[in-house]
Length: 329
Image 1 (tube, rainbow, N blue to C red):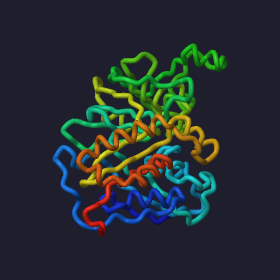
Image 2: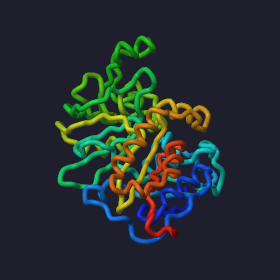
Image 3: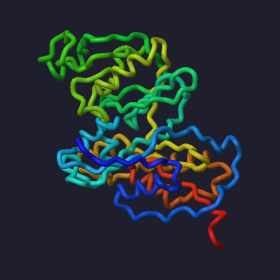
Image 4: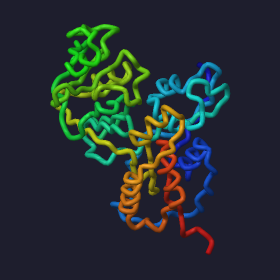
């Protein structure tokens, strides 16, 4: 698959905000004024809240957003959220596509596995302060939610056997009581079992479900990603399961907001290609958290950009601080 690809580094001033605005079809915000950033305390100026870098590609004739998602370590919903208004199945040749491959780290203890259900993404924080690795994931659909909380990996199994629970066999009575390893096993090639009964991280024989709300509560990864995670994660690893649709973090002295669709909005996006509903509770909570994390830099917050990020839910980190000191009086 031939395509031109360019890396957009987050450190460039306002690059994330401009990319988001372009992807959503909104008007581009004015660039931040030049000059040095306002002085902040050490606790407020954190430089390790972001991993990865935004990228974009130009499509070839045969590309779909589903193909581009898997080729670039992304899930389906985060891909269409970043490219709202583009037909995911026939984007057309030479169409600019945003690859949301920059990620603010979730607000959680940076240890072991952090599963962010709202983001459809998993983070692994290995020993020794190594840079975390992140993978897209499929999560439980409505009525089959994965529980939130802290658990651990208690068992690992290559070529797992699937024992369909009674709740699933009631819906699909044609299922056998035991499904052996192979192409018809929905657990895929590897499985990591939680201390919670019946919940696990596994591969899949249906990769199209990664990055979507389609499972019965388990967490599924692309076949290539589960094989990688299986090697990385030892038994006893802590697992935190959280749900943070809006993430906030510092990068290079600037504050960023990364807003993903809520569960209902993600379904709406899949069904209609647009997000029309607004989660007022989530938005109010996000505004409070943004002000709190901004601390002494509250006077540098651009509320216009913040509102656009929370309304658009593109999943792209947007820089929301500007340099007020350089603005002409």
